[in-house]
Length: 208
Image 1 (spheres, rainbow, N blue to C red):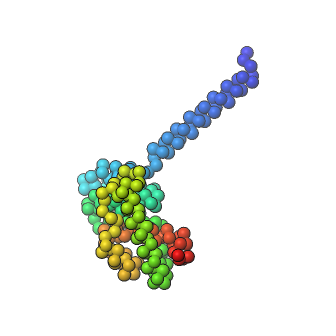
Image 2: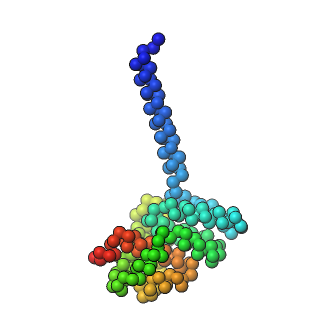
Image 3: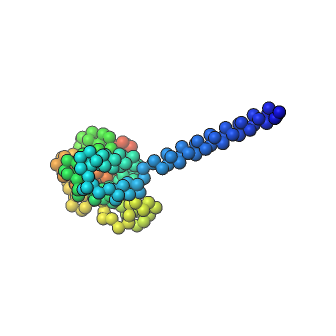
């Protein structure tokens, strides 16, 4: 008969191995399910939205929406500025475009817009300038290849056109957003996300 202590040690070792295997398998599955910018780009490139109708089309748009919402704020901003969804935007109806933009904006962004408009003009102007500067830095890093994520590319146009930047600075942001087309809202989304981050962190309220 085997030594009882030896049997106990063997069982403990076997249990440890099983636990390690289960944990590793769980980590592998979780990693494979994690949404990354590369997966978003691959999904957009792999689906011909124009060839879909009805429920299949709605499901495809919902899946892209869900994938975008699972990215970090910075990843989402970079993908927006890289115009990742442009291929689909050209094929979406105005209603689909509007729904996609609204669904991929941060929770509470409309309340943020209302609170932003209540701030003094100098604070609003400074916050917009700082947000645009931050986004230009992100765009510059992407275009220069500073990021290691190939999904963002390095030859994309800037995230905001000079014309839109000028309007953002001079027109009430809430009014401008509500009156804009879905395409303009898509271009403006990174700015709104950056403003919301500044307000939630208290950076805007503290000033410089």
